[in-house]
Image (cartoon, rainbow over all chains, first blue to last red; front, side, top):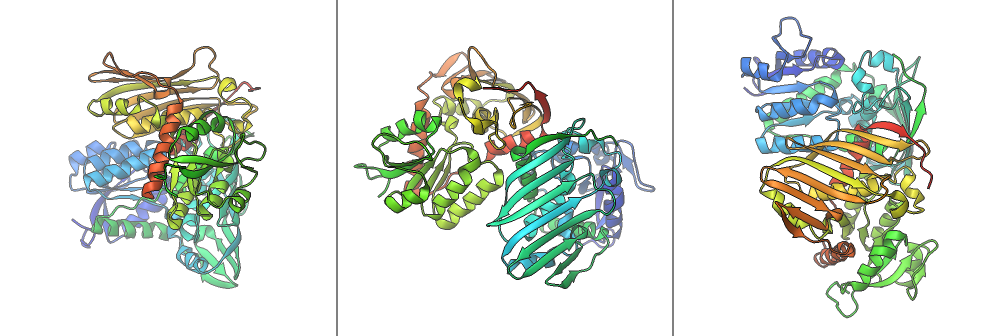
Length: 315
Length: 315
C-alpha cells in the first residue's frame, strides 16, 4: 500500500483525539486522496464509524494493515508513543512541538533512520497560504527591523488543555512556536535570541507571556507572545526592509508587501491539507523531515530568558 | 606559522582574564609547545610581560601576527567576540558553555565554516584523566541505573562572578554542564530528560540547584546539581551495570570499576593541557569541533523543568 494507491489511500491511524485532531487532522485526512482513516487511538474518545483503540498495541494487534500514524497527543507523552510506533515499523507524523525536549526528538530521528521509517515533524504554520510568497519577497531584500505580535486568548483556543500549563507544555510558546516556525522558514539569515522576559502565573508551570529580542544579521526582531488577548486576536508580523514593508497576518494566511496583496486569507484547514500532502510525498520517497530549529529557539528562550512571576491564571 | 612551529608556537591571545583564564588557561598555554601567549584582551586586567589590549580591534591593529584566540569571557558576551574574531580571520577556542543560546553557537559554526576558520567549542571535563577509561569500560556493559552528584560551594569556586547569576549565566548548570559533557561522552546510548526541578533563589535569575531525571535506553539516571554544598565537595558519578559498578570522582580524574582503579586523580590542570593539545591538532588539520549536546541538555532542563523559588542567595 503506498501513497499513490488512490482507491483507498495509505491506511493511517490518528492517535490522540484532542481539539487539534478533531478540528484539523480529521477533516484533512477525509479530504486527502493519499490517506484513509483506518483507526483511532485514544484513552477515552472515538469517531463515528472508525475502529477505536485505547492503545497502540491493540491497534497493531487488530489492524496490522495500518502503516502510518499521526500523533496528536500532548508533547509530554508524544515521545513514548512515537518510539513504540517506529519500533513497530510504522511511519510517523508528529504534531508540533515534536516533543518536550530537543534530545528526545533527536533520539527519535536516529531511531527512524535506524529502522528505515519515515519521521515527519510538522510545523503547520509553515503551510499557511502566504508563507511561500513572504519568503520569496524577503529573499531579495535587506531587513532593517521586524515585529512579531502573537497574541491570543488561551481560554478560547485551548479550553481545558491542562497539559499546556504543565511543565513541558510550553504555555504561550505553544502558539509562539508557530511564529518561530514561520520566522525560521522565511528569514534569509539565521535568527538568534539576545534577551527575553517570560511571565509565569504564580500557580502555573509554564509562561503566559513572553517578550523576546532577536537579531537576524544586524536587524532587530522584537516578538510579543501573549495568552491574555481579549477582543481581536493577532497572529501578525511586520518587516521593514530597504525596499518596502512586508506584513503578514492571520497566522501567515494573509500577506501584503510594498502595498500589494501577495496572499488573501484562506481557510486555516488548508495548512493541514498541506501537511498530509507532504507526509504522503515523504512516505512515497521514504524520506524523513525533522527541522528542530523552532524548538531550539523555544529552549533558548527558556534558558536565556528572565523569569517574572505574574497573577495566577484560573481558567 | 603553524602548530608545528616548535620554536615559538602559534601566537595566541587570551581574551577575558577571569578566574578560569588565570587558574587554568594561562598555565596550560605556558606549558604548551604548540602555542605562545602573544597578548591578552581584557577591559581591566593584564598579565606581567604580555602585551595587553582592551579590545579585539586594538589587538588586531597592533599584532597582526596573532592567528588564534582563546575566549574566556562570560557566556553572555562570548558570541560578539567570537564573531568578531572569526570575521577577522582568527581561529577560535571557546570556554564552556560555548554561548548563551543554541542558535548563536550554530550561527558561529556556520560562520567558521564559511570563512575557513577553526572553531573549537571546548568541554574541559571530557579531558579529565579518567574519562577515556570510564567510556571504554561502559562500552561493553549494560547500564541498569546511574546517579550523578555534582555539589559544590558557589562562594568558593565562583567568587564575585555576578554573570553566573544573571540570565544566560546558567547558575548551577555552569558546573552541571561539566557533568553533562562527561555523560554525553561516556554513555553508550543517548540521554534524554524526562523530568526536572530547578530551584531559583528569589533574588537571582539563574538556578542554585537542580534535580534531573534522565533515561539512557531503559536505565534511569538521576542527577543532583547543587551550589550550596559546604564541607566536602562532590563531582561524582556511579553507574550500576550488569557487570559491576563504575565510580567516577573528582570530576572525572578518579575512576574505579569492578573494584579496580582505572584512573588515579591527576592535577586538574591536565584537562586544559589536553584542550590546548587538541586545539593545536584542530588548527594543524583545519578542522572545527563543536558538539552542542551538553548545551542542548541544559536548554532541555530549562524548557521542561518545573521552577521552584527558594531562599535568596547573597554572596
